[in-house]
Image (cartoon, rainbow, N blue to C red; front, side):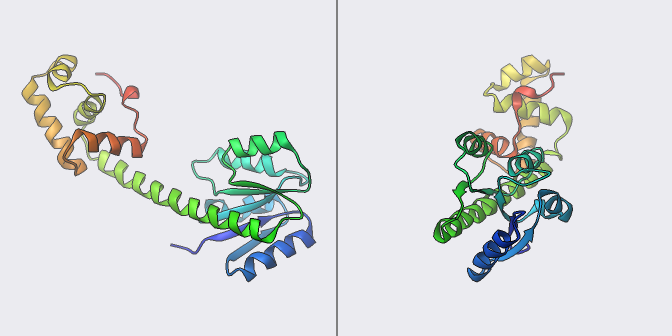
Length: 209
């Protein structure tokens, strides 16, 4: 896996240079961008790392960039920097998942701590995405009927209830249920529920045949 990068996005050359120096001296990889569009064109939005983002920039503001990134399935953690105390902007940014909102001139220790928190969060998110991907690959090995039985089991239905819903025998339900457990490499319903939660599988959205 690539080393995480701190992406600094600020249209002010002196501010950008100062932030880059501060982060680099702290021993972290950095890449600096003069605009949100330059950052998007770089392909760095897939990480790993975090973003130190100025709020007020021409063409595309920091919050607007955050909005664009949030449309994607994956978004690096963001630390906003602003020379203005803008409560509504701060609240909106934090609601959308920003890690911190610091006021310029930014305190060195506050910024470095926010970056460390962001990189830890990104690593955790990456691990969760990897685990989700592995689970979904296992789920793909299920037949349509096995997948359907799985979704009923997760909702807490008993074998006889599932048999009634699917108009099959209880023994057939047991067979499908056993195959689901074997293919997903689990031993209990509790494990199945946790697995579906990690994979983002919503049993209530499953199709009923």
